[in-house]
Image 1 (tube, one colour):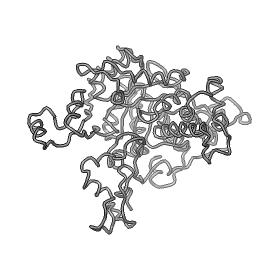
Image 2 (cartoon, rainbow, N blue to C red):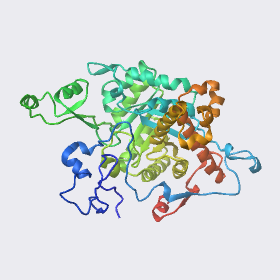
Image 3 (cartoon, rainbow, N blue to C red):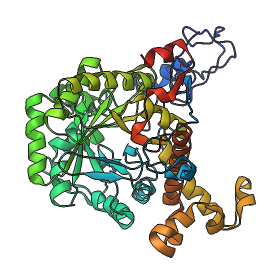
Image 4 (cartoon, rainbow, N blue to C red):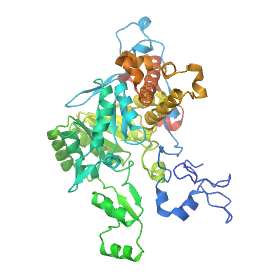
Length: 501
């Protein structure tokens, strides 16, 4: 059997034309010259190198389609009927609502969160409600790298960002709902750092937290974006981006004048962190006024995972987020998303092993978040349990954005009198149908009735996740989420059993 998808994908809109497919190659087993060209080979034959990247990007999200041989579904959740840990109440006094989900992290500046959940880096689609909903739920959230490319009013002088009004707009979407829980974090990649984004974010727009990215673009490599003409290539280079080939190269200029210019691509820069320069960078950020420093790391080689964690310990970093294969939301090459890096559950196991080793060596570890393909409460619970106390939160990115998008869309339809059939049984108005709105009123007062239904959607979705975790924890008679461990998991396969050893 093959774990990889066929040459049919949501990334490219490619489709195998026949129902008989060769498992090893992913091609139709019967391939004919009469085919009108629907599979990924046909797309590549016409569109070429650009089909390494999704050609379906736009008002959507993208994730891996590979069916990995082991994942969190290969565990069931344990349950107990005697005792009660993490509480002073007697067993007869306890209920699901007594499970404590609150968590605190931070080295120099403590951050309290209402839930063991982070909303990872993102700056697309309905980002306003994504960040607003995070503030309502009381969890930390991250603005994605290259946010400057989304700002039409960005001002660059001498290769440095001088005006970045989008950062203020994001802050204005977050602060009205902020209630002292969680934090708004700005992720910066190599290009952001080169162009002075962290400096202007801290000094001009009041940001207090920076996430440093190890890697580029969508987890792994430089994001390459095809530029349609020579003029666009010149403009991109003038804005500080790398462009390949160099439009100022005399041979390329001559080729352009002759009408035989090759395709251009804008390139993100690879980060080149070392123990020495990361220390200096963090010191500079703290001198500027940063109160919390975060790292973002994907499922790279195990030696790299350990090196990043050691860097985090040495520099008193507040949190490291590890992002595994299977998730996604950004501009990711198709096969890179499917075929690259440790699957999330395997990555988590590697990280926990490294953490145990570092703890024995006497290191003070940062808080650690695992992310990559999570969407439901059972998955979050299992990840926290497998994390053995080292994994302190789980990242919900695509799913939280889906809640922001559908929450807003359904709200608009209800207000227009076009209630979707699924929700007609629950009422006729937003106030009647959005079931967790009373919880928001209890926090913010009746003003909550004016909130965007997209932000309400994020709050309600995270509320559902939290309520579900409380049920599983109560089933295990553990009334503090920090007590979860591998004893709370039941392996269903030989491979998942090995993950508990």
